[in-house]
Image 1 (tube, helix red, strand yellow):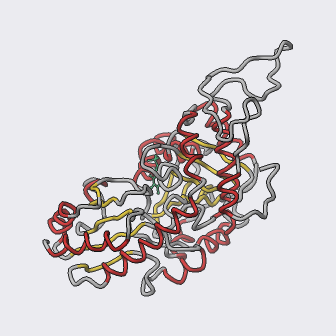
Image 2: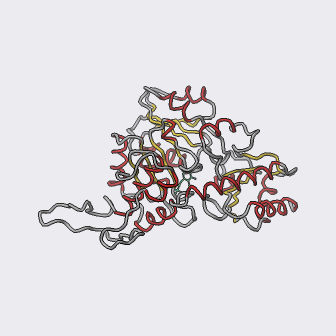
Image 3: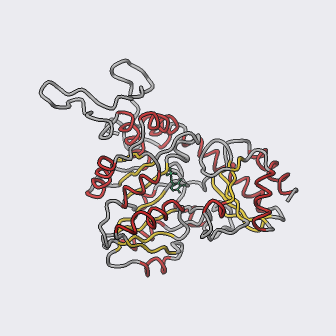
Length: 381
Ligand SMILES: *Cc1c(COP(=O)(O)O)cnc(C)c1O
C-alpha cells in the first residue's frame, strides 16, 4: 500500500494494490516464487526480507497487501483455507475465554469452536444475533470475541454490525466479521468499527472455484494481530505461492464480478418470489425482506447468494436440484458458475435448516437463462 494513495477507489485498488513490476525482469505480471528458502547475506542477515517460505513469501506478501487495501485495514494475513484463518483467531484466546457467535453461522466455524477449542477450555454461546437484546444478554465478563457473519449462511439474515460494535465498546471484546458472503466489494466491516475481518478467499475472492484459501485483515496492527501472525508462523497453515497468485489474479476483477453476481441474484430472487411453488425467498435485496433496510445501510449491494424454500420439503427440493441444467449441485459459492445446494443434508443430522431449502450461488451466466432453467425445473416438481 505504501506507494498507493489511500483515497483511490475500490476498482483501482483491486488492480494495483500489491502489484508491482518485477524489478529483476520487468515482468508486468508477478512471477510465482516457489522457492521455500532464500539466500542469506555474507554477514548472515536477510537484507532482501525473505528467509523461509512459511515466514514470508513474495506472493503471499503481495496478496496480504492487496487484501488489507481492499478491506481498508492496516495489515492482512493469508491462510491455506478459510477455516485455517478462523482457527488462527481462536488460537489467540486463553482457556476460560468466552466467544459469542451467531446461531445461523457457517457450520465449519461452529465445528472449530465445538470440536477443536472446547477441549482447550474456550467457552462459547450461540445466539440469534439479529436480536440485539439476546446478544447483549449472552455477553459475559470473560467474553473476548464477538463473531459476526452477515449476510448469514444459509438464511441470508443480516446483522447490524455498527450496533454490535457499539454494544462491545469498552468491554475488551473484539468484534470479528466473516465477510465471505458479501466480499469487500459489497461490505467493509472495518469501516463499521469491527476489529478484524475474515474471508474464505475460496469463494468470491478466488472467484473460480479452483483455489482454497483464507485471510484475516485487521483494523490496527495491534497485539491481537501479532497473535494471528504467531499462529500463522508457528502453526504453519499458510497458502502456497501458486494459490496466492491465483487469488491475486482474481482480485483485479472482483468489483465487476460482484456487480454482475448481485444483478443476477436480484433477478433470480424476484423470479422465485413470483413463483407459486416457492414458499419463501431469502435475499436481502427484496424490498419486503426483513433485513432490507439494514442491508441497504451497511452494504453497497445485496450480494450474489440467496436461498429459497419449495413446497413439498426435502423431496421437492432434491427433485428441483436434480432437474436444473445450468446450476451444478455442489457446495461452495462465489465462482463464475451457478451452484445449487440442499443445505440441510450437507450440514448433517443436527441441522436446523428447513428441509425444503435450497441455497444458490448465482453465477455470471445471463440472468434470463438462469430464470428459464429454474422455471422448467419448478414445472417438474
Ligand atoms: C467457505 C466458508 C468458510 C470456510 O472456508 P474454507 O476455505 O472452506 O475453509 C467460512 N465462512 C464462510 C461464510 C464460508 O462460506
